[in-house]
Each structure stands twice: as C-alpha cells, then as structure tokens.
Image 1 (cartoon, helix red, strand yellow):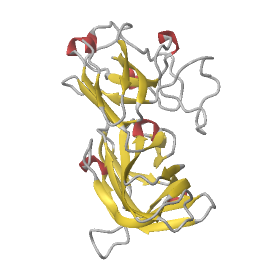
Image 2 (image 1 turned 135 degrees about the vertical axis):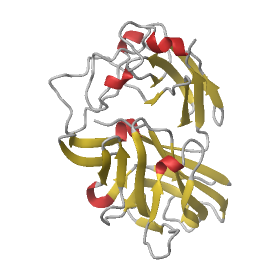
Image 3 (image 1 turned 90 degrees about the vertical axis):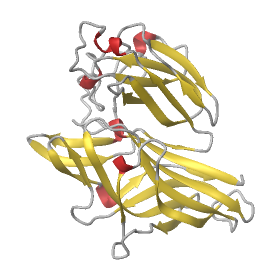
Image 4 (image 1 turned 30 degrees about the vertical axis):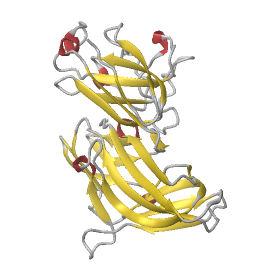
Length: 316
C-alpha cells in the first residue's frame, strides 16, 4: 500500500449578477476551478488529465464546465499535482457563470485516454484508474456573497490507494474517503517537531517515519486516538475491528526531515494534534493497533483555528 497526503481542487466565485437560493435560478456567479496539492510520501508524480467539472443541482440537473487545455489539440488538461503544492494552484476552469444555490454533487471528470493518468513511485510508473472516469465529491453551496472561494481537499493518504500489491499491481485509484469541500473560511496549520523526538521512543529509529495526526475536537481521550481507517472500503478486514469509542483522524501528514509539517486547508474549529514517530506502519484502510498515537505518549496538543486564519503547533 502506498501512502500519499493531500491534493486539493479550489474554485473561486465572484461578481454576482443577481440573487437566489436554488441552483436552478437565473442568478449566477462567475466561477473558476484550480488544482493544487500538498507534499506526498512516496510519489514523484501524481498526474491526472481533467476533462470537465460537473455540478449537479438540487433538482438533479447537471451543469458541465469544460476545462481549458493548454494544448488546443487535447480535450483535457493534464496536471502533475506535485507541481502545485501548498498554496500553489493550476486553473482548469476559468471564470464561467454558474447559478447561485445548493448543489448535491461536484463531479470531476477524468480522461479515459490510455496513459494520461498515472502515479510515479519508487517502483516505477503505475496506472491511475478511476471507476467510470468520474470522482464524485459531494455537496456544496454557492451563496450570495460577493466573493467566494471553495477548496476541495483530498487527503491522498486516505483517498489514493493501490489495489493489489507489488506482485499483483492493479493500479492506483482515487476514492472520496478523506475528501472535503471547504469555503473561504478555510484555515491552515503548521509547526515544527524537535528532531530529537524522531528517535525518542525505543520503537522508533532513523528508518521509521514521523507523522502528525489531526483529530476534530478537543478534550479527547488520548487512549481513544487511532490511526487512519476506512471501514467502508471493500478491502477493510472485519476480523480486526475498530475498537468501540475509537477516534479516527480527520487528516494526517508526514513530518519533513527538518521537522516541519503543514496542513494547507482545514475547516475552522477545534482540533487535537498528535505526533508519532512510527506512523509508517499505518495502512489507511485497516485498523493498525501497532501504530501508537501519540508517540512519545505526551506529544499531543489542542488548538482552536479561527476562520481565515492560520495556526501553529510545535512539538519540542
């Protein structure tokens, strides 16, 4: 199983021409879509060819926005997400009018052409397959605010998985688990981990990987914090059930060799932040009791992130 971190799609809405509260009304807002991601664990390229953005309104009707390809001979825009990390982004749909209102789904359409979607990792180039060539991301709303910015954030450590294994590689797929759509109140979190903590516990060595795990809420029982898990995945092993009362993370990210980490886009609110020096054993689908969070046991903190702000949590 390969582990990757964040990929985001952002779109901005500006210059309203009317008002209304349903996506089927005539009031519109100019809308743009862009793509970006955060650093990944083991890949040197995560390349996707986007063809359309589909918006499904509350009546089940679809609006299709074609991407604008750099190469006019293509019907897709091929993006290596690793070229657009953190706050960088690449526009795929620019300033098109979209009705104001509630949408029940945002669907990214991905090219079915052979060889244009792939992941390069330490084992070579792997096909990136997408069932039906669509990625359904869920609901969102375009309001009457003069300017809006939405971010669709993928925690690729959860949503990008390899089916099969190195001896029977069926390619990578993207799934909606770990994907959130955020509005302009999105916040960021970053910090530094003392490098001495990388080997502070006897179970951690220079070869184990260091991660920050982020949990929604404060006042959580540390003993209930667990690793990434997806009980809805077809490959989840029910013979190793998730403990009753366990709290799975909202997101996670690897700590860089220099001790720095960051989460680029998060909902405003209260969070529990935990460090572990042995997170490399975390399978994002299965419950892994051997992954201790936090580790060392006292490396956990709480933070409140205000809308449109940034927060800092350091572990010393």
